[in-house]
Length: 140
Ligand code: T46
Image 1: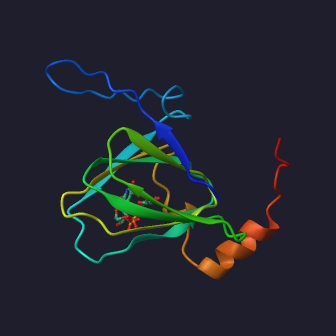
Image 2: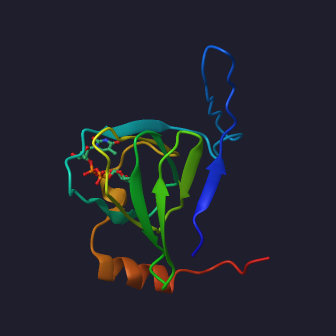
């Protein structure tokens, strides 16, 4: 499994840098929710779940953390997010774990849906079962 990375354009000048994320241009969906994670304690692993129906882009706007993604069908990858110019696309039915947060990490997430606690899958075995039985569209 290869992580899908989005590279954002810096609109910088002599004063410094600015990145603008526009829905359906820089981020491939209409953004309904933005949240950010900061002050994560050392050694903590966050996530450990999948979403039935949620697509997100994760951007480490400050500091760094590592995402491990798993599609439940044997595909896995790990990616260190350590720059504000890069987004990681996390599609639905992807198990995610975030670890190795630097103490200054600010992880911003853009999501295509509002918060719905019923959308979470917390049981890894059940997630794999659901992912395996999913109808997979044939690739190009
Ligand atoms: C995800 C990863 C990358 C809300 O009230 N509204 C929200 O929009 C969110 C995201 C969370 N919450 C509450 C639910 C919990 O009481 O905030 C608390 C911490 O959330 P959670 O334990 O789900 O955080 P993470 O870091 O394990 O997971 C989060 C997102 O929930 C999840 O969708 O993909 O970040």
